Image (cartoon, rainbow, N blue to C red):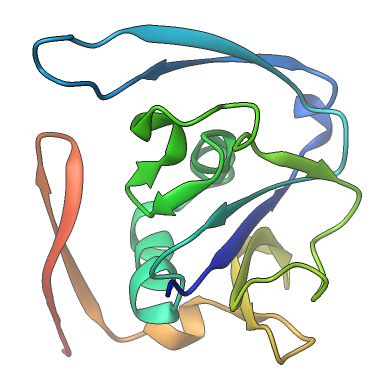
Length: 170
């Protein structure tokens, strides 16, 4: 059973109402090769949201959002890829339907009516844009950085895919 997470970003006024085309590289069997496709997505509401099915807890999705997605534009593009099996694997890369896994446009950040264990949002807090988090059982968001301040989190990159090899306390 997974630990699902909901990841959201408040859409800036300059991004609302735009038709976005997203080019995706699909994974396929080596003998079939790769191909690209384009999909339209109309950004017509205040918040864009997507789900991550596995590893939604702080030590995985929370840590990776904090370390790897550090700006509004990066958060926007991450969520624009739609629902994911895990942090690194959007469902479209498994040749699943874009229509059923594209990001959702909603008026405000999701409440507990969705079935997620963790809720992450990129939003302004105390004058700074940053990741916030709350568990299903909580009503208030906490800045994600409060969980990771003072940690030296090391991420190794290999062929444009990220994986963890550890972190150390200073």
